[in-house]
Image (cartoon, rainbow, N blue to C red; front, top):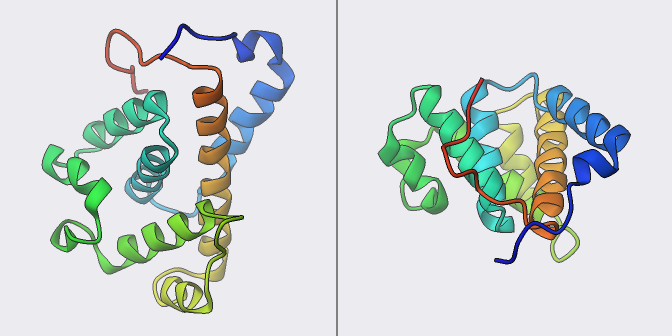
Length: 153
């Protein structure tokens, strides 16, 4: 990867703050582990190394076993590491992230509805939108992975 292209936080501070507020608001009805698993998986799909590093660190801080964190990319095969609700949420998140190439099917929606309330499904979908926007920004502007591990609050 080339050097960072520009500091979008400094150049568009109002939009960056609004994005941060959106991120903090999205997914609040979901537990931290589920939010971070979804953030990690969507960041993996979208190729955002900065976000992968950040959400991997957050999951470890939250107490998720490293082996389980590593299995997020292969969650369909690593079923024993993830609950039915987590697998349904990951499936929904991947389907939402695939728009416009694919839209979530009725089967995807039925599957997620078995595990989450309608409010949680809406929140999860906003969560995907939030992380997807950060992935787009960080990948587009070549935000580097920090030399030292991301400092999780």
